[in-house]
Image 1 (cartoon, rainbow, N blue to C red):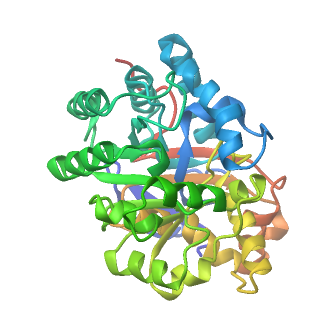
Image 2 (image 1 turned 180 degrees about the vertical axis):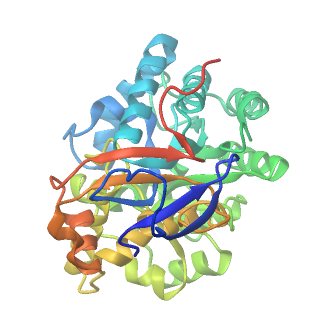
Length: 395
């Protein structure tokens, strides 16, 4: 930690140097009292649930049926999707989130609107069309062939845009996909060298329903593995009810995990044992999981992760959880070589956060303020690749 630092950014938006401010520095002081740190990484968030945050309609499967699927059906209307996409990007920016792994709706037009908004705002993301062809109302299900063709078109238009936006293959969860769609999703990821994101072992009723729907597979994780969806480019959200063998297999396959503790509390799903993942060197990022998660703020999610770890008698420090909110999240998304640290050679994704003066007395007090004092100060400035996040581009 540097009490007074000079951070230099080159014309490409990369950090050229970081060090103490030299005597007689000609540059004016910027945001005195603020803390500059890497931008936050949201490892799991649902764009079409932006307007249903906090809808308390039951545990996972009931909540999906009563709240989520009716709301996501509205995203077939392009104007509605565009309006929410702007709200979603604004919420990420206000929270200091510079990178996110995003589930879109199952509608291709809504997913196109999401990518367009992310591009306009200058955010960094992996995002994907949510694949689902069963287990939900017809208003949100899309047949496998049509969904995969739509994904191909979205990949052609958006994947790799500005080396900042990437298409991510996104089966909602095993229950919402036929075997043909799961196999097609794996083939799509293999063909285009894409990342995969989905849900795993979130809720006991969900696990039992998955076992009944896929009787020929050993367990929930095996459904994904047997269809080619579990590897080093796979990101699994929740992972609450994995046994030791399941964690071992995740580690052996090099999969990453999005820890979503606020959502887990809200839906009463259970508590993910973060320590089991860390013991096996599984990469773990933090996910808001909006809209079961009640905030876009990654520091609030870090605080919930702290609470979860205490309940499981495996405590974590605020400092460690801030690492998962930044560098750890970058690693979980396969971006550790470019974001998550303020070091020379990294891309300049950074935020300035105002904190009370007393929080600067020591690193420990600062880490505690950043994670636990949610009313202590706002995110003041947000940059991706050295550019202020906002409506920086139009297309």
